[in-house]
Amino acid sequence: MTNIGIVGAGAAAAAAAFVLADAAPDADVTVLEKSGGLCGRAATRRHEDLTYDYGANYLKSDDDRVVELVTETLDDEGLADIDEPVYTFDADGAVSPGRDADDRKWSYRGGLTQIAKRLFARTDATVHRRTRVETVRQVGSDTAAGDDVRDGATTLLEGVGAAERSDPDRVGALGLARSVRDPEVQYGLGYVIAISKAIGRSRAADGD
Image 1: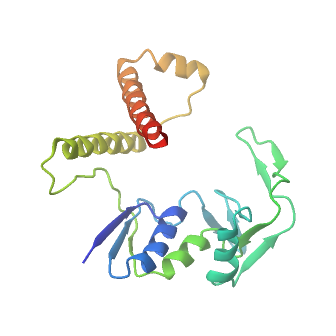
Image 2: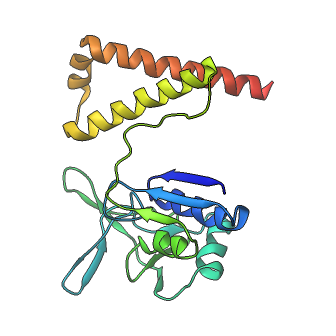
């Protein structure tokens, strides 16, 4: 049996599990999510009779596949058309209406996290919540390239894990200017730039 692991239980992960249910029906799919909720940046909360989203606000109709998925493929019970502007507020508390360019918008009466819940419900994937992934190791490869990929992925994930545990503050332009004097930050930026160059070379070669 093929074993497939998905890190994170956001909308993209739910969509991947949904596709795999048809593409690889015999595969054993396991999803590992560090938080207690589903749908990543979408975050639904409830207070008494009020249901509200403080992450992503709605689904848009700018892709025919999304329209088909929401209105035909998945259960549309509780699906709500949003006719009025969606008001947002910035870090300073200034409130403004959302973009008028979005022709049609949807959410769910149970909150936008319903999209991931309904996708996962159509699969046999096992979802483990409150399960943090801090390292990924490649097994069964003796090649130098495999070792490099493993070590690189481990470095990135360890860095992400350390950043999550440190609860980093917001950094403005002045703070950024000060941070780049830090040798550790300089080394980290060099690492990111090296990765960017490698990706750029690969993409450029694919385009030739």
